[in-house]
Image (cartoon, rainbow, N blue to C red; front, top):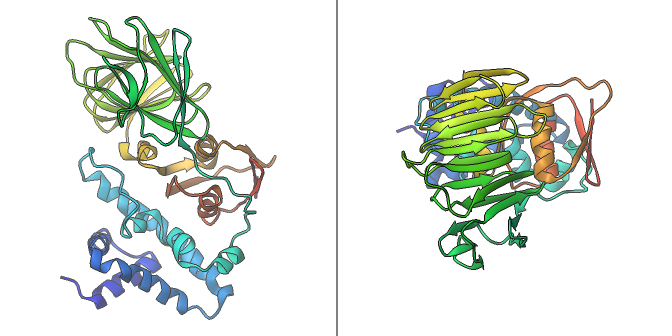
Length: 384
């Protein structure tokens, strides 16, 4: 068992960016214990108190930013050796904030409000994060605005109802259901066969109230996470604008927005990816990802948890360009992003809870790059 002196020495290595993978594991194990969680807060405050005045916070800020990148790389090594079924680390724990980033922890939790205003240049015309919202449309012509206080809907022989049991409507045998999630929204669905789907912002899914006798086919746009109920007699087909996916029972994430590459990431099982209108085809196994862009279909090894963090209310940006990051942020907060004419894209590593206000998310990014953000209404201006 490590002593408090040992933990302090390891934490000092954290601040200098020299901590090893083994020491990172020790630190996480230590702070994962309920009795030790206050120690992290105390260690951070002690580091801050060593600064002479507020103006020197910029030095601490720079150290923390550099160290967070080092720690992020270590956390990726840790995750690579663990089962793919493991969820994104829950951000309710203090230990998880080591992965989120100590700078962000300092900014969001520790620093007094006046200091936050001193080190941040973002105008706080704040925008709240997205919520559970969607529109349910039936082929019979009925439309329902789904409650944002519910945890999702289910479709079964009894009709369509909220996950908690409250009935929304009856169904007819040959009816088709479409669920549309607007910008700034997310919604969970239970399909007639027991398949679970989570729809991200600006996405839609169409499915029959009763699947046929030879296959289960759905149509989608945008982004969705699937946990397909296993049934070897009824293959599950997901059709998008330019790609079809065939599965029996599996967990995967499908990113298919118009004009963007189609990205399929597999967590569990096996899927067959077919590019519409071509002879391009590939089979994915867990930890693999296909990308269909133009007339090219490629396959690579990835950490699939980087691509499903949004289902656990976490933005996971793993070596992503800022333009790609801002596409995700713009959909979740329903904003428009304005870039300077001479904009130079940068890549980032970050894991940020999606339940934060927009200014907090932008501040975390701003302190990791050479640019600033300015919020004007529902527009975000980027300046370099």
